Structure formats: C-alpha cells, structure tokens
Image (cartoon, rainbow over all chains, first blue to last red; front, side, top):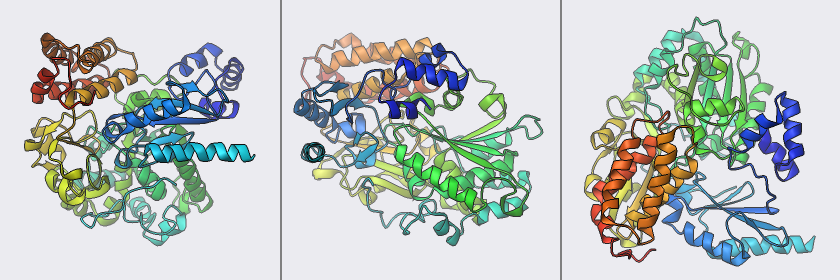
Length: 134
Length: 430
C-alpha cells in the first residue's frame, strides 16, 4: 500500500504517512517505522527516471560495477543522487533477480537485461530526446 | 518485455512446458493444455491422499532449505477452528536466482492451481502471493491471471460446482531480502517491518494472522499440478532418490550461454556448465562455482564433478539452495567476491538480532579492508572465527547465509587472501 502511495505522490511525505495511517486505523508512528525498514520507500524525491544498477555478484562479475560507475559519471551524480533537472536519479541496488541475463538495470519498474555502457547511454539519450520533444 | 535466454535441447520441460506457447499466460492456453485438471482430480481425492501423493513425489522446497513439501503440509492441524492460509513466497531475492519470475510471467495459472491444491490438502480457502516490489510487471500479470480465473469460475465461491471456495490475492514487498525468510515474510504480509519471529511455533501451527499457514516457494507450488496429474511416482522418477523431479537452474556468471534451464535433479554440474551453459566464456578455465545462490558455500573447480541435488551437495558441505548457479572463471578475485557478498548481507541484515547485525558489519569492515589493500595476516583467521560465532545463533537463516559462504571462501581460497596482504590484488581488479 505504501509503495503504491509512493508511486502516486513521488516520495513518502508526512501527509502520505498520515493518510495511510488513517486509512489503516493505526498511528502515524506505526507507519513511520514500517517506512524506515524498506529500501524501496524513499523520503527524498527521486528523478523522474530512477536508474537502478545491480552490482551484486552475478552482475558484478559481468560488468555491473563498471556500469554503475559509468552512469554516475555520465549523469554527474552519486548513489541516490538526482540530476539538476530532476529527470534522472541513480541507485546502486542489490540483486533484482536478473542474474542469468546480467548485467541488469531497472529504470523505474522496467527491466533492461544484457546491459552495456553503450546501451545504457542510448537509453538515457532516448529518454532525453522524448522529453525534449514533449 | 525484458529479454531472456533461449532454451536448451537438454532440458526436461515439466514446469516450463507452456513457456514457448503463444500467449502462454492466458487462461485459454492453460485450459487447452491440461490446465486445472489436476485441481479437479485432487477434488476427488481425500486431503490425506493429496499429501501422500506429494510425499511420494519427494518434492522438496525450492526456496532454499529443501524441506520435504509433503511433510510440511502434514504438519498443519486440519481440525483447527481457525482459518488456514496458503502463502506463496515470490520474494525471489537470493543473488543468483531468477526462476520464479519466469514461472509467474509465462505460466501464472500453474501457480494458482498449485496453491488451490494446497488449499484442498490443508483445508485453506485463502491464498496470498507475496511478490517482491521490484517485480511490478509480474504483480500485474498475476493480478490479471487471478481476475481471469475469477471470471471463468476457477477462483471464488463453489469453484466449478465442486463446493470448494478459494480466494487468491497478491501482496507486494518493498525491497527487503529478509522478507524472503518465511516468518519475516509473514510479518511483512501483516503490514509490519519484515523481521523474523522466534520459532517454534512454526508457521504450520501459527503463521499468518496467528493461524495455521503453509508457505512455499513459487516453484514448489508450480510443481504440484504435474504431481497430482501424472502421479507422485512419475515426478520422483525424474530425479534421484529423495530428490524428485526437475528444477529450474539459473546459470549465471562467466558462461557462454547463461540462462534459466529446467533440468532433472541430480544433473551433473560439469555437464551443466559445459553442455547446457555452453562452457566458460572466452575460453577461460573454471575456478569455482556457487551452486545454489549466494548463501551456499563455494565449490572449487575440482569439486564440481557432482550431481546437483540436495543430498549430494550437502555431502560436499554446500547446499542446493534456490538453484542459482554462479560460475566464476580463473580471473575472478575471490576477495572481491567475498567482500561484495558480505556488503549485501550487511545491507540486508534486518538488525533484529545482534550476532547477525554486528557480525555482518564487522565482517564487512574486515573484508573491505582486505579489498582496499589494508588487510593483515591475523584478519584472515578473524574472518573465519567471526563467521563461526554467527552460525546458529540468529533468529533466522540470514546470519548463517552470510557466515557459511564466507567460511568457505577463506578455507578454500586462503592463498588468495594471503596474496592480498602486500596491498595489491593479484588480478588487478581493485
């Protein structure tokens, strides 16, 4: 429920916590402690396109670490950093269940398998192009 | 749609037999290919007969522990006045494992049918599928399949006039490895922080909402329709004694053809690497294999001529785990691998009990020190000792899962740790 609420609002805010608490019949504190536990729930805003790069073992040995460093450099941000225009953010994540098709990247909820720095560049550029066109 | 690997001619397709069909996730495809027949057959059987059939099949839990499924089901007190629950663990998070997502994406109805049969066996009328939050598109696929099943009378009240009621729901996780542990999953399902519970009582007696609960992995439930339809003995015969059936092996790492392949239990690991996975890539030599997801102790190349089933791997002091087979070639730095895995466990440790919370933190610090070229000789023994003092002292298996592979890395590749003492990685990787 919190995850879906976050998707709608963009991030976990005080108002969101209060709303969820009242709908579930619990105190905001009880909701707050749940929010603190789960890594997919964010209190700070993320980019419109949240790029999650797996660097766990199967991805690491097939180039996931390099991919993560590459995208950080390209966008000029660090872990959980967000670009100035608010379009992209980057996060180093743990195994996302794509080990056999590694290295893997997830942009928002979309999986991208067999990733390379070139393919990731193309993906980022394509997103920028589409945004510009709008 | 994400891209996946091509199938292999050596596969034995039982659970994945519909994967190549067009529109394989739809209920029409499912019904046209023996779908829901096993449920109707199970409805004619007594609950004891269903459990017995699953026992005969020697199906063992595909999530990691490998507990015999039939036995697990028999622990549920059927006469309890409380409602009972069938819960599916689809919080696939073990590094190296990526099979459950295929079973849900390409054959969601097989999973629903498996859960319904489990419902018949333990007199449960509600099922929950706990899917990790990252798998949003799979939650949508499962929700669609569930809606189709309701619309066609395969879920809900009085299913197909048999007088049996069953409701099925999905529930989302939100990025916690720990929630793959059964009691932490139950806590999370109830809307709380995903921390484990003290056992006993086991979930079979007091699980979800303090009621009797059976909790199995996606692949375990997905195997049930085939067992009921074709008989437990036929399923058992596919594998080795006490390790029946087929399983989905997720080959990853330095391979020419990594991918998810359905193979009989007891398939030889070297054959799996060379014939199914196309051999180690770039013509390199094999160095080591993590045979069942990151929590399983690593096997050296000379230990890899081994049948892949629960008992054989246990004999080799490793585990069959969740079927994630990670292949490491001769150029892999084992210190880096051990360090990365400990970072993972430290990050995912829920902090509920001290040995795991503190142990993984200190192990990470030592391993990072090694990785950065600041390791000292005494650290090597300390890694082993610290790991051993976590083993068996935690609420849930996460502590063991962090300790066991670390002990194996140090014991089997001590020379690599020593080679890092002069501040440099012999492989030049960090």
